[in-house]
Image (cartoon, rainbow, N blue to C red):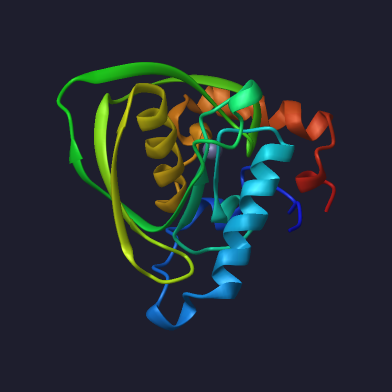
Length: 176
Ligand SMILES: [Zn+2]
């Protein structure tokens, strides 16, 4: 396994719609990507990571809401995930993103969702219901697959201020 570099916004891969993983792509190599993504998420540390954040434009996410001694017990690796059911009841959460450091944004999400995805090794379909914090994480990661990051949810003013701040900090993404 390997810790992969996480790219920060604005970046074309983060803004693009990720593409579906094709049948011939399932197997050891895709499984390795999800392992590397999980290791990258744990190292950050974070509770979720989408493939575009490690510059891979495919529909792959990992999430793990667990913490402390439980860390690692709620790991889900999802390929081609899709929300098939969402509750009308919503939840407001102050979200952060590894690709948009130092920005917290209140986002309203569905409180309960059902997600279907494929297993990285076999392509087998899996399904699970997620609630509250985990539902928030999944919806945040699925936004990444649509090319949406937290920076797209704030005002032009706040966005400009954040970009200037990052330039000042000479974040790696701006060193080029
Ligand atoms: Zn994010």
